[in-house]
Image (tube, rainbow, N blue to C red):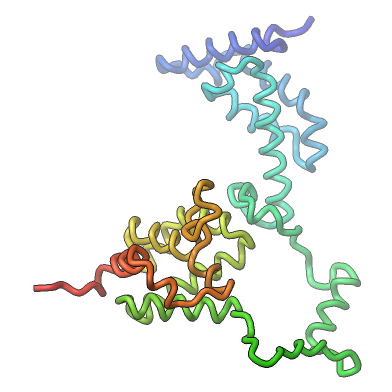
Length: 282
């Protein structure tokens, strides 16, 4: 005989009853016998899914329990479908966290999930030989190709490091202390290199409270600096100068004098300087 909670409507009715009993202080999930049968049913239901992600069956039950207590599951057209997706996402995060040697919260981040699993040094022969070759340096028998010669009158393109130094110089010229400008822009550039995508780096840095506090910037100044350097994340501004950011513009051979011709940009850079460095006019 199948349990009533095996159907979407039966599950919704049970979850609503457990929610109503908990709201008045009754520990329904601990003391209700039907709740215990539900969790046993959940372990059996998602056992194969947990095995596919190298997890224990109890891991799927915990993820299902967290989802069942949410309002989204009780109000869904098919509660079991929502729970299945929640369990799948949690098991994927558990599997990636075990491979990356990090927490499940970190494994859920897009910039972390793209990395390969951690490997011991010398775990496979190919990786060991690659590291050995890198440690010995480039071979003299196969030298690196020389950079192509530039035609007379043609200037070399601006590199990323040169563009970063130009941005730092521009911030310093507009009132930022040299140390603050260097630390702030180096920090942003480092996160950009780690993320590999301007929009991902902007989303990560926007929520990076520890970095903002260490750089002595308030929330408005931090948001302004990110928008100036990495561009406006709004899709409507993607094809505009504001959506690209000054760092990418300098890499594309824009001149600093052209950027400084924008009065609004100059005012934003000046006003976003750390408070301790701002001049007080008497």
